[in-house]
Image (cartoon, rainbow, N blue to C red; front, side):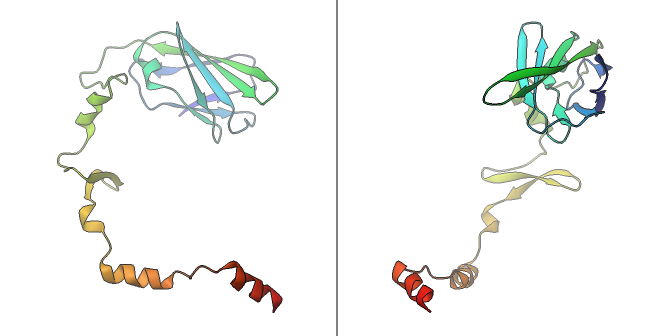
Amino acid sequence: MIECNVETNTAVITELYQYDYGQKIIFTGSEIQDGTEIHFFQGEYGCKGTIINQVADIPDYLLSHDKTVLAYLYLTNIEQGKTIKKITILIMPREKPPDYVDPTKPADYSRLLPIGGEIGDLLIVTEDGYAWKDLDGEFASAEQLQKVSESIPMPMTVQDILEICRM
């Protein structure tokens, strides 16, 4: 995570390189309310994110170019919106990695999936990374379903509820 102190007059982030991905900014120095918007701009491209637990994701797309990114913390409510901080993010240039996955082409991410998987399988996170899980073998048996259905309370009618209330 990249740290950004929001109490200083100017905030400049210089620790990011072109083609980095999955980067986050953690805001320190002052409490930032959850739900505060962060607006990112790089040339004519702009997008918005939300700060949760003092952290905001930097869009991977912005890191694919070695151009400066401007970010603004923006408080909003029904009546008004106000910019409370400007952050300059300097993206340092570097050579494109040979296995770089272009964030604008989601199909390229398929090479990151584990080998295997069939129609109907679910991709899950394990301690060792990712794996495919066969959902067809995960259904409950008729016996298990019967036990569950027996444990579900029967719904009451309005008449039943009124009788209980009179007791």
